[in-house]
Structure formats: structure tokens, C-alpha cells
Image 1: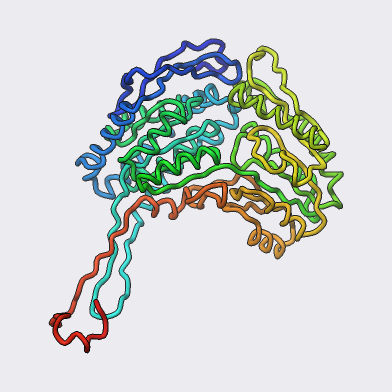
Image 2: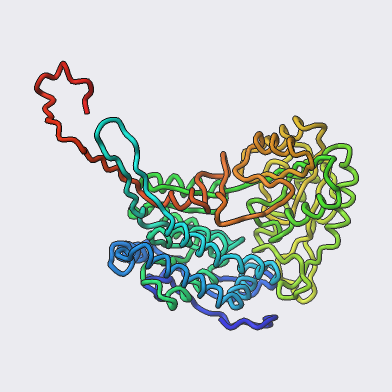
Length: 509
């Protein structure tokens, strides 16, 4: 797809699944429209894959996993190839970030900044693969005990619309570095850069069948993939209910699972922290990606002594955010992904009013000249929010945040932990001891102290409770893509016969 700097019109392209290193026609499932969320225009059409399509992709993946070209590749050769793929990714960044902006509506500056870091995920895991060590385990007696790790096999990966390439690459980089293979089901809203990356990697030398893509709806194609009898691991990023459904399906075939699900990030702002800086982090944490992130700073819990000042300054900051055409370099926030998502965000503004919260700013659809059919929402802040309100408890997944006062550290933690979710949390304080105390006590898999949204390929990423299971990134993710075999070697020459003089033998084995 040729994308000008500010696309006025785009030819509607028809795409098929990506199997065995190329796009292929599907088995006749219904076709789905892919839209530009900034304009509402159809930019592509994709199939809703059938069970036969899923089977075809799985057969291709299994053949690649067991074949010589990939399954027989040694670790050093694979690491060299993964580094080559990182170089190919980097060489195509310009076309990738423009295509992603077209497809999911994030401002071009945001998309460029995010995608430019992704080649390093592949380089990091290539390095981990080279540095990998298996264990020699001290055991009782004259034995040598060591472990052998073998790649787990086929990884089914269901990715969401909010960060199509980033969330794909968090999984794909470790899949390739460990010698696994994958079948990816991208969001039906944002499949285009996933297809493009598969093409780039194939041209760079990735063997056919290692990276397959099936397109379609989560409730059909995604469900069939998650419950397919030949998957060995399920990786899913999405909503908590989608995780429950897919996880239950994958459990029936005893697939390993990593799931990063919903979140309702609490941000605890203490009165020893600079208010202006806290407000700047609040705006960034809440409105980057139009708030469509699982770690969106959606609950600001602010010490009472600075509460009014914080709310006033956050109102002023939020009103300066420029909502507009994602391809305009001056734009700071783009649309949400769909009309359905826009209506969801606006419905939560209604809940805020109904439950007695105070609207500080936003809460309505945004008007962007020349983009009348786009899915824009004004960045929204509610204050005086109680913990029993829906906007405090439920994930909105849009440019929407709430502010709640607290009295002391214990009160801040009580409010922060009053949630079914446990993905991320953030703390704003200059008190080093307090920072570590609160980080240890808050319910979350990721904690930022005086920062937000920081991600690194070496740092484990994931949540607890309704925010999912398992970890992406880091050695935790790498190790989770292997089966571990224990090998026990007797190094003695002692005779053995359990059934002779049994009573005098000290142990069974």
C-alpha cells in the first residue's frame, strides 16, 4: 500500500491470510472492512477465516517447526537471522509507521517514536539466545543431573488494535529467537502492518511457515485458533473477558499461556512531588494513544493538600492537547479506533455524570475539520471520583481519566488496590523510602516511580488478578518458550537390585 504523507484517498486493497511465506486466498469466509479511524473510510478488506483456514496455517507452522530449514537451524545461525530481520525492520520503518498511523489513527509522531524501538526487541532476544545456559544440578549421590531445553512449538498469538506492531513484536521476537513458530491473529481493525512485516521478514530470509497470519474476528477466527488442538502456547493481549474465553479454550488442549489483559492503572501523587511535573505525567499517561492502552493512567489518586491545584492544572493542560489529523505533525492526539469505541468512551462520561462525579473537561466527541466521519473524542477528566463509581472501577479504554483525593499513604494504597485489575501502577514522590514501601505493597505486575509507560525488552511485562498471567519480555518470557527436560546420569558402577535385600536399602531410587 503506497501511503502519501497526508493521504487524501487510498485504494481499497484486498488481503488474504499469510501462509507459507505469501498471501493466500481463504476458504470463502465473509469479507470484513478495515477502516481509517480518522476518516471512517474503508482502506482494505480482509477475510474472516474459517476452520479450514486455521488448519492450513497450523499445518504450515508445524511443518516449519519440524523441518530442516528452521527446526534444524543451530542457535548461532538463528541469532544471526533474527539480527538480520531487525535490520530489515529498521530499513522499512518509514513505510511501517505511516501504514500503522493510517490503520490505527495514532499521531505520526507517536507511531514513529514507538516503532523505532522495536528492532531492539529482536536484537535483545538474539543476544539472550546466544547467552543461554542450561543447568547442571547438584543432587544426592554419584549422579550428573542436567537440563535440556527444547522449543515449545507453535505459539498462537492474538494481538489487539491499540499497538499492533509493538505488541506483536514483544511475542514475535522471542518466538523467533527460541526456535518456535507462530500463527498470529491480528485485530480485525488493524491487520495491515502485521501483514507488511511478514512480507518484509520473508524477503529477508525467514523460512516459510515460521510466521503465519490468519485474519478475522476474535469471536470466530481467534476462538478457533485458541482452541486448536495443535497449539503449544497461547499469547493474547486484550480484554479480560476475551482472555477468559480464549484461556478456557486453550486450557482444553493443555497449551501454555501468557495473557496481558485489562488494567485500571492507579497513579498515586504525593504532596512532596512537583505538581506541574505530576500533571505533565498525568496527561502523557492518560492520553497517549488516545488512552487506548492497558496501562493508561486512568485513576489519579492525589494527596488532599495538593488535590485542588492538581485538578486545576490538569484541566488547563488537557485543554491544550491538539486533537486532529494523525498525519499532521502538529497533532498530539488522534481518534479512537472505531465508532463503537467512541460511543463506549462517551457512555462512561454519562456514567460519571450519573454517579455524581465532576466533569473537569471533555466528555464529548471532538470536531476535527475535514474529518467529520472520524472517531474523535475530547480528552476527558472527571474529579471528585469515589472508589465505588463505575469510572473508578471499570476499564474505559479511551482518553479518559479520573481524580480522587487521599489522606495518607495507607489511604492511597487502599484506593489503589481497590480494583479487580493488577497490571500497572505509578507513584509520584521524592521520598525514597516511601517509594519502595508503596511499590512493594501496591497490587500490580509493573510499577513506575516518577515515570509512566516505560517499557524495555529486558524488563518483564505482565499483571496479576484480572490483568492476566505470565510475562512478556525479559528472560522470563524467553524461558517460557521452552520445555525443560531433566537428564539424570548415574556415574557410579554400584550393583543394583531392589528385590534383593529390600529391607536394608535406604531409598527407593
